[in-house]
Length: 260
Image 1 (cartoon, rainbow, N blue to C red):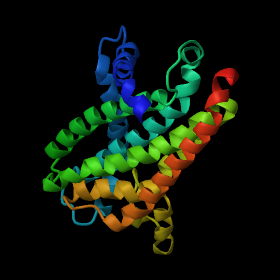
Image 2: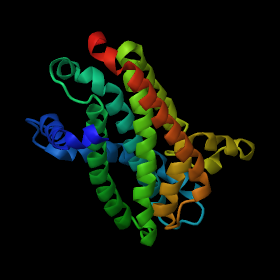
Image 3: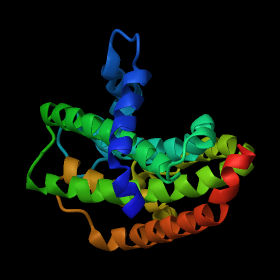
């Protein structure tokens, strides 16, 4: 932590550079941060809204399913973007690792910072859209930072662990991409949990993302506080993932530059 604090200006400037290079020569610039996820929401809403709108109990709005989608998508975007950014940060910056002396832990922190900034913009715009769609936005919105922090911890822990292993086993990157696709459909984002047969619904909560994303749905769709009992399991898992990621990183950091 002391080393990261000493390199804080390097981390901040690297996050700024990441955004400037990502949208270089782009006419729309940072708008692409919003276009892709919102286009995905629009696609699912147009295809499935009529069929699934009636499956949302206690919500009387023609845009209920769109609001449900928006709240789930903004949560998934933070997690998946953090995992993929952290997983690729060491391989992507192989030349820097070989030439410059700096704490290698700066790289996943930079990747996480970029994901946070991207998601903040997405969340603000998504909440505004949900409000105009008739969402009952209220005081419970204060729980979004808590839920986002939990998703960020899960994504950072998984991403750091996979990022270190990815240096030595490049096939992992392709495998995680496929796993995230399965994870998206095994998480109640496009569909509701009540569509699953009752005897199997409890199995959904073995997925830590389902527990957190239900909190997003409660806050944005129903204007209710999240069920904190559901957040205990993701919190413990996030702690274990970060601890395991740091342990693996500590054991492997001296060999990473040579392998890269």
